Image (cartoon, rainbow, N blue to C red; front, side, top):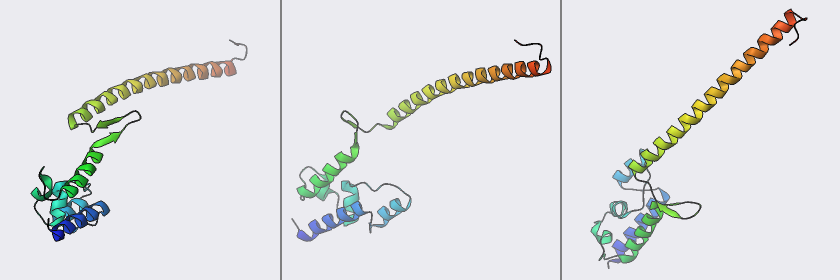
Length: 140
């Protein structure tokens, strides 16, 4: 294990975590507002070394691979009140959002109907109030 390469990887991890990357590709991603994930590809790019040094099972730098893998797994899980679950796929997100939209559309229709009913009741009450002011003898 080369100590200089090891230090390059550790420094790259620190820069990615802090958001102060030097690599032009990663700087471009950051400038576009994209999240810089701590993964083997980004660490290798930032360190200026081959991804295979940390990205394979028989890595020459297993402690770097383990740190990156641990962070990647943490990024891919989302805490829920009861347990952890994997991030939704794009298709799952679309299906969930469509279901939420359908439910919200139903709620909106119910609220619109209630609003229309309330407006009708107000109209009838205003009409009754106007009639009783014009004809005080007509008390209903």
